[in-house]
Figure 1: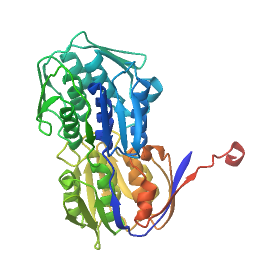
Figure 2: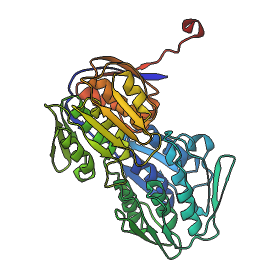
Figure 3: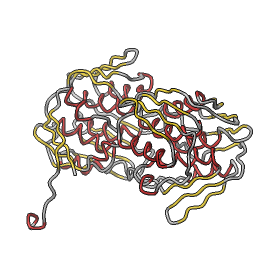
Figure 4: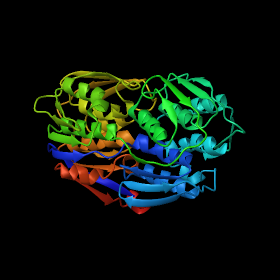
Length: 427
């Protein structure tokens, strides 16, 4: 077991380059199954969720070859399996995208109930609703989801709630269905658009991604392509918040500034200066942090994945801030860790009230999930003194080379082996 040891209290300065988007990569990798051909995927983030996705493809019979640290060649011509190994699918939430891709190509798929961060109930009923509308049958037995169909036909599908996963899985399952599929009340996130662009590069006919209505005209077959994944909006936002929270000055490179607009707007209101360039943003702060009111919403609203990071920032704002979480039930679990550091936060249901304190104190911390873990890293960077963060595997699911990137900005952070406490030591 490993942990991060961080000595904070110093502003971050310098430049950091953002990796490819995790949430796009974990859908585009399963989508290579539809090509039944060779795809070269560039700008893949070097994170554990991508490694698991590549391992699943290999287990299904794909030939996976690393061309560079962030570029892979994937040949899905001769897949031999439609059952995703149980131990792999339980390692990440996004394993459910293999259901839509395998169903579309082979008419059958089996995947274990997905794992990933525990953010409360995350049902896949809207995914199964889409598969059913296209003509598939599904069953869930002993934690395994099975879908099968003799033929998939286009349909009109209205999602009961806006869901990124459901929107993307419906696209995957509809691209080779007979006729047209119309998806309504769709998610509009940048990674939804990125998946649609990849599918179209492979010969699909997907129109309207980025709006709430997506039309998919089924095609008979698809082919391989070369594709570069978009920059990670949440990784970029994390370094933007870190710069503002530590009172630093950081140029965040390899980004799409338009994707960052909800984050940029809140940081400016909090007292940070944000300067936008073609493919970079510069964030700096010299004055006090101002209190905010934040409501998380589907894109283009404020992203739920950024909520814990903004919570850390607002814990030292000059006044009272409120955050209302509109997406996940368990997104405020990081608050218990913040309280260890002296933060004054009260949570009532889906609303957290932050009474700003002068500064955070170092403490032993725990990463309860991916984004909460990133928030703890920023909190530790803010606190004068040394903090330790455990369960860092959550963080490494979504942040490539986080230690090296933060060190490049002047942070005192290192990853060390965690020595387990023996029974005798505990007594």
